Amino acid sequence: MLIEIKPEQLRVGMYVHSLDLSWYNHPFWRRRFLINNEADLSTLLSLGTRVIVIDDSKGLGPQPRHDPVPDVASAPEKADFAHFDVNPATPKPAPKTPVPNGPDSKPVPLVGAAREAEMQRASKMLHRSKTEVMTLFGNARMGKSISTRKITNLVAQISDSVTKDPSIILNVARLKTKDEYTFLHSVSVCALMINLGRKLGLDEVVVQDLGMAGMLHDLGKMTIPDVILNKPAKLDEEEWRIVRSHPEKGHAILSSAKCGTETALDVCLNHHEKMDGTGYPNKIKGEDLSLAARMAAICDVYDAITSQRSYNAPLSGAVALSKMLSWKGHFDQTLLRSFIESLGISPIGTVVQLTDGTFAIVTGENPEDFSQPIVRTFHDPENPDSSISKDIRISRIEGTVQVREIIYDLTPELAEKAQALSVFVS
Ligand SMILES: [Fe+2]
Ligand SMILES: [Fe+2]
Image: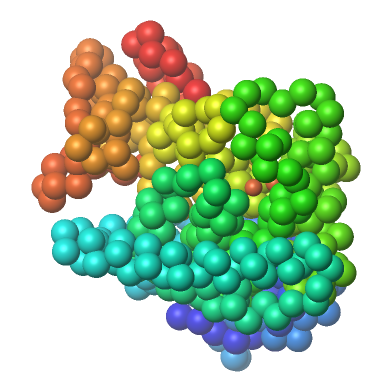
């Protein structure tokens, strides 16, 4: 249940649902979070928030009225709330009432005629919008002040489609020809930002803002000659320098056209920065990058490497995510895991636990349903000494074994058994 409380009622172990602050103005990058310790509580109290909404189904509730409000020093020990989501690796308790497309929900794909109808609707909507939006992008490039009403409208329609089934818009936007790459890549990054924002439990206003930022992130590419953008070979040094100028050019265009929000400006400039400070244009390190920029870095690369580009064949989702997990220092790893969950895809090489309790390695993709993996089992906790190695083609057929969760932090025993299979483990 959501309960509104005053700051003096806050205590360690409460789950904060929302604050009366812009998410930019507080250091907790998750809009919803558990107060894990005294330091988090003190930071929260120092923000000057007047009203806090807590969720007592996920953490401690307020003290009964006749109880004195505890001061920080008398807050409960960590052990008192150890069963809540203190450790992100600990499986979360199931929410009492799942929220559609909320942080704890899994994508529920449309099937059959409903899926076909939504694919056609999304395809027509994007086809209608393409010319309008590209004209607006062109106007912005000329330094003209433009109305973002049409882009806002498109972002709302993409958001609507993501609510129904996130895979629809991504599938429609996946097959990009050279001339529509920039537009459909913007659509995909918009959809991925919206989907990830919802997975993180961000407010819907923030989610729409992130969608708009995704839509505008590569505006600077409008200034790059097509002969470079579509070159069917590796770029030379000078061509790379020109391509790498697009974040700053896009930021300048958005600033002068006065059509970008704070988030859009930030994402436009910083979506090619990396967590280890080796990105461009300013080599900003992870701790100085906003949540929006770190999200955009993931969404941007995922769409680029799963799309047909000038000289690279597209990767499947499971292979792309596997590669992204292996690029240490590039992405925010916690966010990347949330992103993977938001897509419902198991990257190749990861260890998963199945719904029957056994552990398995993802070895491939089910050719009949690419969002589902082929796995090889290697450990059954019920019979730890038995040696099981069985290939299973996971499908969405009801009553069959499914992937329960991806296990990133393996125990030494699991790691040893997984490696014994001689299969690459990320
Ligand atoms: Fe870019
Ligand atoms: Fe991009």
